[in-house]
Length: 399
Image 1 (cartoon, rainbow, N blue to C red):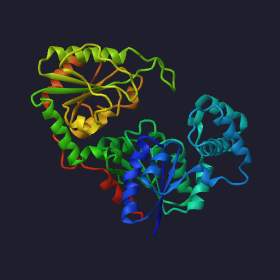
Image 2: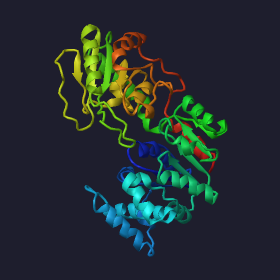
Image 3: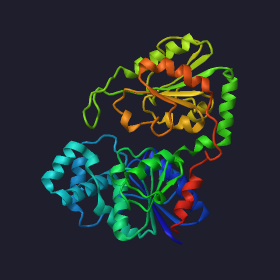
């Protein structure tokens, strides 16, 4: 039986990998190993899948690397697994220092923190120990990128699964030969990578397995029941995904507009109050203490106690700045209106990649809503189905 090594960070990246890894594991089509980086490890552990971490590959000669790790970890709070944190930081920093020298490594880490890491030597060490027949990684720029580049050097085939648009990652994913196959969200992302230099045959349109729950018939039924129970059948139901806009872009320092979310919400409330058949659902961020700006029978606070997937199936239109709720809404069949003006606009070009029906500044929001909400929910194509079933054949082709 051949071995597949999955490499992923946490959050949406581990959720993208798990359905594929679990299917291979349960079908006994391959021996599965998951190199789970940072916050991905507890998720993999709960899933009961074979887990590997950086700390499993520490060698007796790594004393200096671990000293770096201890130094860097000392400034961190809420460290869950100190041994792993020290190993991850220390081995990654040692690789950086070996590549660019001690002074430049110090300068880059002070400027970019963990974003400075690309631990090719450590990933090569891991691959040489695990000896996988295939590497599957997502589009993160550090250990996942290092895994695919190291696999290429060692003659191991690889698959890269892209979560969204690869706007920043196109610098390496757009290069011919970076991963034998790249799995992407839709045809627009495929065209983007082909325009960057990839061969069409290297790109497979599969969707993102992290969003597969949206296609569950039971979830759709829950959404329909939710809509009926709130008597929204003849209403135009909006969902606003609340966000925070920074005063400065965290990476390049461009000025942002912290008032943008509040101004957009005010415009949404105003539009809802002007249209007697409209309902506005407001979804705060996790952990956000949120109070409705104005009380109204047609303005609801749909906080984290409301499961998102059924709510999307009960909604006609998602309005967002740059939240992935917009992507999920499109996949669930909602219309999407993006409010432009965020410093993160370029990273989440929903209209450019076919996921938004309109992308407008706050001043044009009312007009956009007048038009888009009259379209009704988007008819779902037969091909819109769980992505795992489309990623698996891409993986199996190498086994």
